[in-house]
Image: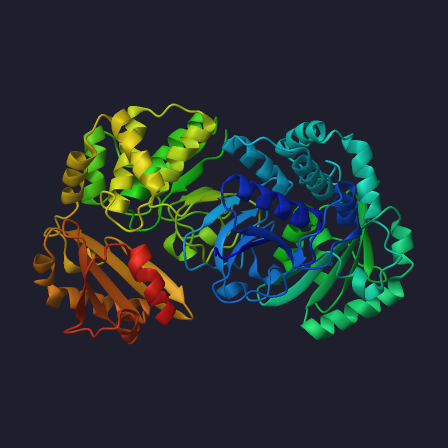
Length: 308
Length: 308
């Protein structure tokens, strides 16, 4: 029996991590790699659940840890601190990603396909083209959903012409109106009321480790920043507990208005002034408004990481 | 005026590093990236010079250091400790490589194309196909030479079917007999008499850094291991000086017989027993014979690195 190779995105999976893992599995099967299987490293969020429900398919199974020598394919991430427990001892066969490279070390050569696009699925879309495979409707919906999610309906500054072109073609195959479908999907992900503060700050949290400082940039999407900020007190309590427990220098929660394309960031921790330095303005009552900022990867991380 | 983006392979460049850098430049121009220019990080070895002379072209210009923000494309390597001085502050646009990933950290997303093939040029060969560009004779000779060099005429265990297929097609375009041309090229690189011991141990030396131990695996090709071992005394003196100067835990010199496909390795340093553990045999007078071993990447590095 062939050994399974697990395909998964990052911890606190977003729609790209889940959908692109599934698509990479389908693509693997088309290429004759029958032993590959998608997994997920955490709970499926409501936005992603909307996509799975739309298609009537199940989420990949949860993967909590890998054993030494386990074959894996990393999707939508490469940094070990964002990956599965045990990754250091795994056999990494391939990486498909659209982030910076850091904190990764392999013993052997591997397939690594990264492009500075807005979404992993846009890279997969090009892989279908390159390999001459027809894109099926289900695959098109998964990839279109990932692109809509990562680029906030092509409005994020991370969006490239490759993402626009891919979404246009995928929407046709998927037989969806990208705007209508996309807005419904994004809105499904903004229902934050049902989450405790502890859950909310971990929904899409990325752990960084720079110059010896561990810190987190978490992000939630909303249609009303005000509604989320109304919970500031309990959010701060949850964030302080997280800082204490994980020995963080700083925790940044970006509350992003997906309709107006702005963010409010809530920042706690000893290193919080790195954020003030990054944006040349002061935190007031631990938060600040950032006009036009929607992308963690492009508008938050590089600036803040330089000042940590 | 557009800013130049430099394309270069690793320190102590081999034929793949030089030839693939040139081919990546040509490919860049075909794609409309006119600002890219090949560079080299060290002297051209005699094997590579044979290729350049065959084509009547000049080697890329020497690059000693890059300034902050300099745009670069890394070929045939990704580890910063094998790259140019100042790489930490450079802007890495792309990487094309066939090695493991380690000791690389970028601030931004990038193009990264790695495949576990025997040679970088085989990846470039596939890029020509993917992009629909015709391969010109000069390009074919450069890529064929790189493949012959890295795979020792397809005899190294690093050789994949992709390399075989690429070399077959490239030899046709290049109008060469791969065996005849390849043997002449490889032999041109085995003239070691003109090098001092200090030069010889640095011709193709790779610096590793594992669990806090810095060590070097250098390799020279020959048609007579005996001839090289006759210089053991002066080689050891040069190696000990290198260990002292760079604070190395170990220095391994692989002397590889390209005709018989075997290697003798000469090992000095405090950590030398890592090598004995790796191959389950003792060094005698600081060296041991390894039957069938020709590939540093596949047959030396992974085994030794585990025992460091």
